Image (tube, rainbow, N blue to C red):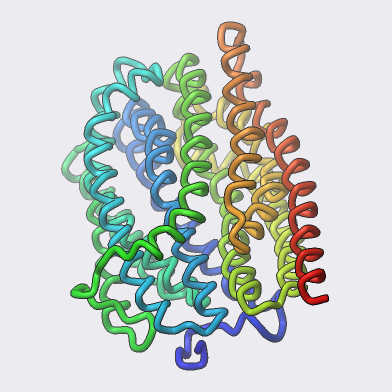
Length: 455
């Protein structure tokens, strides 16, 4: 089936590392570019508006992630489902599932649009957002969520193309929209003298451009990936499969973000300079994490296709290669960013207090970012074979509930920023150990079941 598309990657035969890297690099670049373009929101308002505007943009990140990840996790289900059909060479099901996936994307996008308008003010107040920052923060959040349908269309479109290993075209579309975003950021803030609302408008426009580009591509595609808007429908057999894999992934992301929201509320107690410094360091930290994320996305597609084709040993080899690669490449980035921490942070702010808080986060979180591979890679492999609930439960308990319990127990005792950020590497170690153990238990059980059925 893949031979009919020149951009498709044969994941069932030949070298694993080279093909895995071929798919992973554009995904990493997509994620990193997206974060850099998001960071331009923070950098532009930080340098050309005010620290309050910078804090308003940064304080919204946990809220946005909480809602967005709850729904974008569904695109994971779409990717795994389509990859499974491709691995089994079921072309008709690929096209039917494609149209259901886009219908799910549109419905999810409009739900998020409405939800964002409703929760903006109460959530920001719950976060103890500083009073002088709150008006700008709520306007930014409401404008940002107007673009949610665009974001979901692009995310699902990328998942569709990723199912055949085509990660380059989504990268080109994101690059185009991202450059536009930076230009519009400077126009609204520097020329029109806007603050947080200006960069929110710029982001919404750029999201619209990226979604239009990916829609046009799929509508002009030939064969199984051709999108016909007249055929959009909700077929329950495909919706069920999307939800089975994607809903736990989305729930994990949402709970993950809730724990970060709780932590953000503690960070905000140290003032707007701490919120701004945390936001600046977080932008660099995300780029390190996106190395792990990119390998996870590639791994899910690889494992799903090979598992459907019955190549179980290849699934395990791919997981091992992705695990080692994710840790290695993330470590290189983490150490590089730490060594260059002073010039990098100065891109966001020259305020000494903002810089001081950013340095603390980089020391105790950014340097330990490779540890996220300990739970993310085994979890992605399990999702590739259709086991999405187990990694969700483990991650929720280890990375989410543990952090919430820690914050609840320590909230009244916090006296410095270090006490807040130290929970990250602790939770990564506990969750990673648990996930690796369960990965071997589950895969061993599947292998024994297969051997018994063959016998």
